[in-house]
Length: 271
Image (cartoon, rainbow, N blue to C red):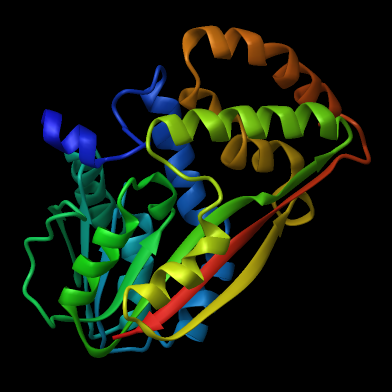
């Protein structure tokens, strides 16, 4: 990516992770692990067969492929700022055997797309990384058709918990959240989305919270997808200081009564 693209990527910069292969595997797992929940969210948001859909920050493309199956004779366009992820998305299109999806490089702050073109825009785990969410919402509104729907799915660390060793967990979550904030992100974006969409001029704004727990994901998978990758938001010194907390969390995860949950916010609005 160019220097400008790296800056616009906010707090998430795939390709700059210490272990990019592991992060790509996490992204692929994250894209499929709660698909039933996402399908329900799409249905509640008004996604229907025949729609023209834009998947913002589509990552490795698996979610866009599932959207393509859902809209049937409609179309899906996936855009992402990262060239490597777009390459992976093209591979996903082939492996998933869907024809009504296409992938392009795209910047949420400067969408090179026609205005009034999409019935439905999906933004999945991207707003937590943005320094300028208001600009992103404005640009998305331009490419939506009148009456079109924006559906934003994201998290809020105030709705994330784990036990036992909840003290170590809370300290690590707060430390990594502060690290992401320094990089331009916002781990508390979920509960703020309702106000952001309302101020941006969207109508019929609504927020729902979908719980994801270790009962459905399993403890190991929950920590892998929702927690451990956050080390990347810390400096080298902060990573060293966080290691004792991580060891306590991993040890606690071995307990038969270990339990954790996070709340996924789904906020919708129409143009």
